[in-house]
Length: 375
Image (cartoon, rainbow, N blue to C red; front, side, top):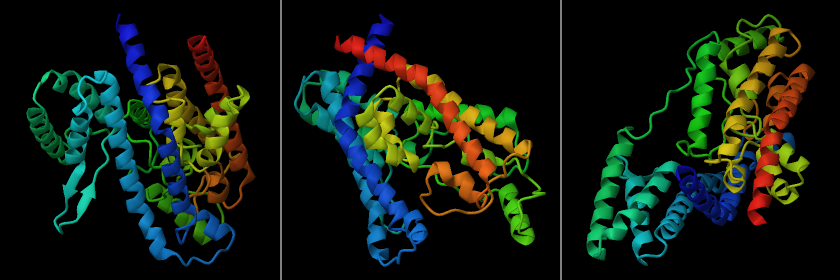
């Protein structure tokens, strides 16, 4: 009985993901353009030596994508409530929109309006509760009043960080502790799979940890990547190998989809995924909330990190040290971050191949399940 209910619950979410997928795809391309073109340090600006004259236009992209993503989440909540409630009341879905809109607005001390995106799991829970609880209230006025009150309460909880507070990955430690890093990577990937972390934002490559900064200082002073003080560090392993194609190492997933001949989905997402924008893929397949993809989504980044660490430890590859351009394709981060070390590129390719092998049987199982469902 529980399995049947979950399958119905998941199918409802998955079918709603398909409806909002085109909007998420547009948002991802806008983010890609913002990072690579309308950015003075953007990848395409630097690679093709383009003159950057659109500073004012570039500044418009951040609020534009923020508002678009918020509207997508509100629309997602509206559709979910409609499907959960089976159209019991025409105004019921608007109560979900009211709760989410009030919960996400925040007024800064200088009276600027800041919109905070609610996590997907919160949108789903609110949609389900509104459909099953608010639907039993016969008076629309009371429903709207309760929605406003619930939104204000959630707003206070979100500002106090009571709802979602995940353990962070420390950037202050100089030596990498695998017994700590491994479980934390698993927890954060699990949180993304559960919709606790929004998949819209790509992971930015940074070198702000003390160990990475020390490596950069030595590399610049000696003009060499030999004898770095901290070759195995958070930047050279975690940010360089755990996000090949975005969170979950989904470049391997894209290649697995190509092998099983999901050409249309691959064509729509391969360019985005190369740059780390995998939100459309995670929602359309879907990966999020899908038990078929939980294991590879967690395991693939761990294997990629181990491959990178092994190559660096054996001296076959150099650790990424140098700062790279904004929006650099994830599979080039190690190559460019080592100033063209071929061992790093080979390690990255092997990590992507391993991710593909890990994802492939799960993709085949998902495709078989879809075919049986259609039959």
